Image 1: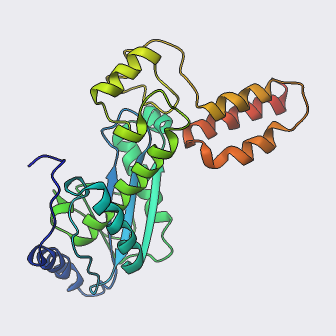
Image 2 (image 1 turned 90 degrees about the vertical axis):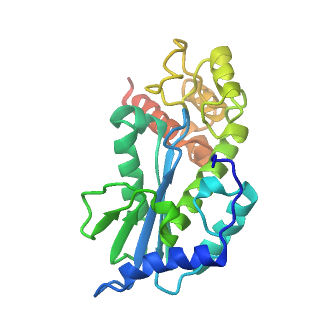
Amino acid sequence: MNGNSKVKRSPKDLERLARFDAEFFGRPGIGRIAGIDEAGRGALAGPVVAAAVVADRSFRVEGLNDSKQLSPARRETLFETIHDRALGVGVGLASAREIDRINILQATFLAARRALESLALQPDLILTDALKLTDQDTEVVPLVKGDARSQVIAAASVVAKVTRDRLMTQLDAEFPDYGFAAHKGYGVESHLEALRRHGSSTLHRHTFRGVDWFDRPVRPSRTLERLLSELGADGPGDPLVSWRTARPELPECELEMLREAVAQRQSGA
C-alpha cells in the first residue's frame, strides 16, 4: 500500500487501536497517555514537526489512521476532532538550521521534547512511533509502526502532519519559487528542478542530499530580505519594530538569522 492511499478505519479497526492503548491504561497509576509522532523528517526543506496528544481511556476518534494513509481533507477534519476530544495537544518544531547543526535524528528528538514541554497536562506514560526518548522522567515506550497500532500515536501523527502542511503552505508566499504549497518541501522532481534553477533558500536543509549539490548564495524569504535591507538603511523607522511585526511570517531559522543581524547592529559590528 502506498503513502497516497486514502484509507478509512472501520469501527473494528478503531476498537483494535483503542484496545491496544487500553492495555497500557490497565497498568496501575496510568490515567493519561501521550502519543508522539513527527512529520517532515525526510523533507529537503522546512522544519521537522512533532506532536504530542494526551488522552484518557475514553478517547475515541472515528476514522483515525496513520496520517500518510489519509486524504488532506480527512486529516483536516480529524485534526479538529482530536483537539476537541483530547485532554491536551502539544506541538514542537526544530528548524532547518537546527537540523543542519545537530542532524535530523537529534532534531526530531528536540521537536518531540518541545511538544511535551508545551503540554499543560502531563501524561503518566508516553507512547512514541519508534522514537527512543531517553531524557524523560515519565516512562517512554517506543513502538515500531506505532501510528498503525496505537490510537494516541495515530492522533499525534495527524496533528503533526496537518500542522506542518499548514506551515509549509503559509511559507509558500515567502518563498514563491519552490512550490512548497504543493509538495511541502519533499524531494519531488518539481522541487529538485526549482533548486537547480534558483539554488537553495534559508528554509532548506543544506546537509541533505539534493540540496547541498547547489553551490550558490542562499536565498532569504521576501520578508527577511526586506528587513535585512532596513537594518542597513539610514532612513526613518525602527527595523526592530518591523521585525516584531514580521515574526509570524518568518520561519524559525530566519528569526534566528535576524536576531543575529540585529545583535550585530546593536553592538556596532
